[in-house]
Image 1 (cartoon, helix red, strand yellow):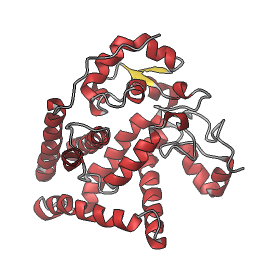
Image 2 (cartoon, one colour):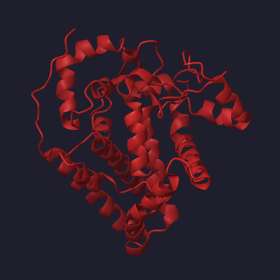
Image 3 (spheres, helix red, strand yellow):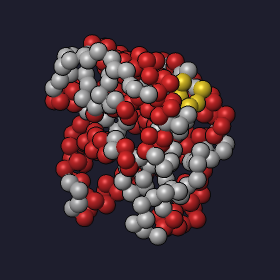
Length: 307
């Protein structure tokens, strides 16, 4: 079936995304400022939501939004509210991920959760147990942030020690960008760093990982490797409509607020394109994979460059 296109926006400033950025940074500023007045049951969800929301805003920036000028866009999205992920690293790995021919490949897709047999064996029994636990949604939420952040920081520090991959420059730039975040949180708001990590960073990453958990699945045809999660009005807003992930991979330049209209116009064609990999909301994802593995750990059709 043919894909129906939306009228082009042209090269202009996207007001909805600018407004979204103001809401996100305002939300973060107010929540950190009033942290003493908020009970834990309110602080944690507010902190988690704003961290996950800002990461999705950064995702928009990586795809060239909300202005025609990259420097302006990065000035909006570069600030590491999550503390651990350098924007430059996120940008580089995510754009590699959008080479759809390589989706889910454990070598070529930096966002793949699949392994080779050798890679899985090299983890050792404890590592394999941790990876296996994260193949369920509950395990991904509870253990995924520690695993992802720990591996990323270890690899970055190793590369810096060995002088590889421009890691020292990445760390230096990231440290500079963290300064205003930490000055505000610790110096102005007087929030302990451990509390910021526990109430904002870790649960925010857990929430963000709900989106990535089931959005890709290994398949022989690249078009069938990307899922759709329909009927997700609340988490859809948090994820900036990237629950309709097939639409995003097909038209990565669409701003978040146009994705639903594009999806409605092309729903039948997109479902046909991805082989019917559709979930009825995130409760459906939880019912299927809350305690059941989403897929096998070893990629079923990887390229064979290691055995």
